Amino acid sequence: MTDEDSEDIDDVVSMYDRDDSVAPGESTTDESQDSEDQETDADSPGSNLEAPMVEPGGGDLEEVNGTFYVKYAQDDSVTLHDIDTAQICTLVENPGFERHEIIDGTLKAQPPMGVSYLIEELDDQYSIPVEESAEAPTTHVHDIATEELDEGDAIAIEREGKGEIHILNVGAEQTADTVAELRDDETTYKNAARYEDVSRVEIRTDDDRGVVSIRYMP
Figure 1 (cartoon, rainbow, N blue to C red):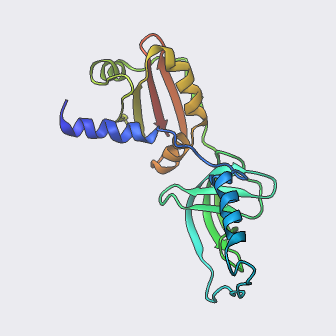
Figure 2: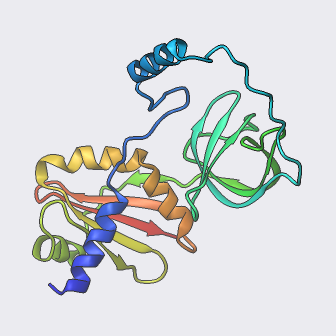
Figure 3: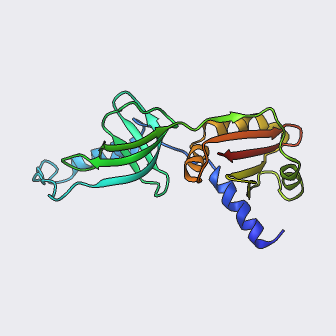
């Protein structure tokens, strides 16, 4: 295996590494540390002084145009991820979006602070089905997974026609869990939205050998 092949494997593996995420209403701040800070502030001289109010600056509010993945959808708010820039935008109302949907459009930042958004223009709203197939991985995919990949590795190959195939070697005991994670993993949906002419995702497995292929297809 060449150094270039190893880099390709690392790139695809990193796609499906799941970082700890923060859902709406959750906090990454250490609450105990906050309490200590508050106590320290209360004991500090001048803690009763009031800071002057600072009015937000003027100027045009930001517009963001792009393709977005719906990470969270609640009755009164939506969290969107720009699939190209990874920018996170929070809508202050839900115009009918659901989790895992893909949105094409323009967002308009809202006053006074410009940190929340509304839909300015909606160009498209669609779902990308991610389904498990009863068919086994192709012989070519199977050979790559078992001969070129170590357990835990993944690589992308071109698909005949349009689309792309990602191959994972996960180990036989992890196959079912991997499929369940892929069907709920934002990376799967973001990839599908990013790849040209892809409208659906098909997952094939060899349970005995721990091979998983993710087929991004028209």
